Length: 150
Image (tube, rainbow, N blue to C red; front, side):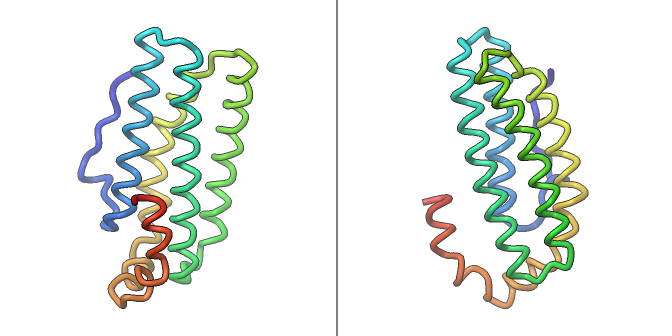
């Protein structure tokens, strides 16, 4: 599968979110590289685990921003994250049982990320940016920023 390349049309306009999305893209590419270069299952598993952990942190961060901004579709967005997380957890479980799901996982992540950023994430940007511009969000979430990027 082709390498996932970040393009400007994926930018949300929220720098911290864009950096997190770019890191997820890097993980997806690391998974593809490990998979296609014949790395051992344990190496691929490590990339999967790190990517899943980071993505879950990203989801929690993104959801806290939406909630703080009173985004009206916060619960629906959170549900999209939960459905995605369930699917990834299922693939992760199958992988831990010895099944090589790395190609299936890579394809799913590759397709999901673009669609999610362009559709779902684009919808909340206006609400979150208002909070950021008013100085409400960054102050309260500084500790979380530090934990995620410190």
